[in-house]
Length: 207
Image (cartoon, rainbow, N blue to C red; front, side):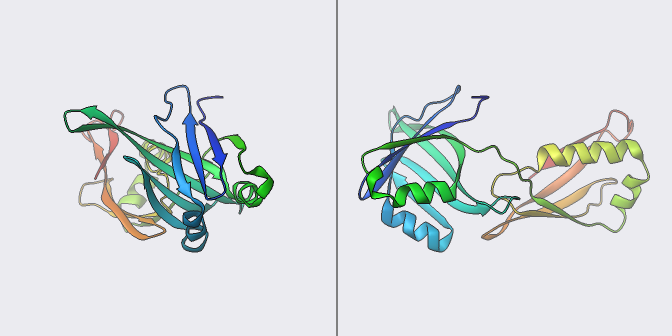
């Protein structure tokens, strides 16, 4: 399975239920979603719903191929006793055309559909609005490599569409603002630490 999550979907006339399985985690319950909620998802492209103590955020996104993908972010919560809860967050991605088509077939009522979560094959767009720091980095191959590697590993955030990156007052460093389909998201900094020795200097993310 290569650490990908298996999603089991049980189909009913008024609702569906989902369970997830992976090498590291198994969902503590079936998560029930009403079909009427899925109809709102098609219209609004975004939905938050709950079942027992757990929550799920559903979002429709376009993959680079142009195909529509259903991204579900689960927050699985269970009773830990003493008025306490424990939880686990998990994100799965399903091909929406297949998912929606399967739901539409009445002959599938009472059946189960199992599918692997899609691999995440897109990254947010990074838009530089830098007047000085980026130019200085491009003149230093070592820093150019460090920054490129850091951005590819650290800004691959699920459900974010783009990052706007601007100069920071710290040399070779930047501030950023993130954007989701719903508007402005997290802001922070991409700071180069240890500049006394640029060979050992490292970028880190501040939010």
